[in-house]
Image (cartoon, rainbow, N blue to C red; front, side):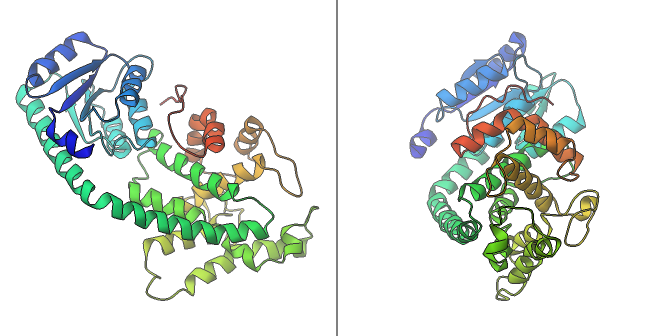
Length: 367
């Protein structure tokens, strides 16, 4: 399939609600490329979903009805569509903040209106050439990378599953934490450009999220699975899972100590119970003293703990859990992360139920 796409005439999808703009771009590019047009964000996503192997480049307007360009870009990033469809943003409004966030979300380039034919053709041709070279390279190495990630995922989940088994919880907790961590991290560019995380960094954080409670392997089962409230002494033992888990990672073979995954896992394991106002544990870190990896896993962990049944509590409904988090009933969280949570809250039940971040509606997500 991939080789066939390299031999056929390449297709550009122009997504713009302005007919004149579409006509100008078509006139500049038609002949060398097949041109397809859509007039709003929802139609654009629907076309991509129904023609997954036919779009080679997307020219995406920032401002469109139903769903604007930034929302389309966000959903493409969430569904990993940008790996195969490079996207050039187009707009007459030269807003640096939006352009920066578009790049963070995965846009390949940006073209401003009024269009200059030489610039449009040069940038489109350059992006196409680069993408085709990348696609050829991916054909050669994707199977190797996929197998490596599969083995890594399997080992991490076996290890974390052992902890979940001792804790009387299903392996769904680990999956939920990882999914929600990924969803929050990928939605961050919608609210801020402060955290410029690559896809590889997001993958590492999500892998580390599965390890967050590894230190509980040292906590006695009678405390882990106690149906009633813990005594102060028992709670101190429970809290020690953060430092014990961190020590386990510190004592790893020195060959692995400097690996990004180990460093990130250490941040998450030690500090996922810290709180933004400094009232967490074990070190009382405050604000951005807490690594963003640990902040996001902390929020995901609290949400799943609220909405899951435990030996000591019933599950709390989704919207009630969101409200409790926003009302600081479970500690104080980074306001930017709460904005992310608010934007994605309608889709979280789908993600948790289906175990994937995929083609959910998400039309209520606003910028």
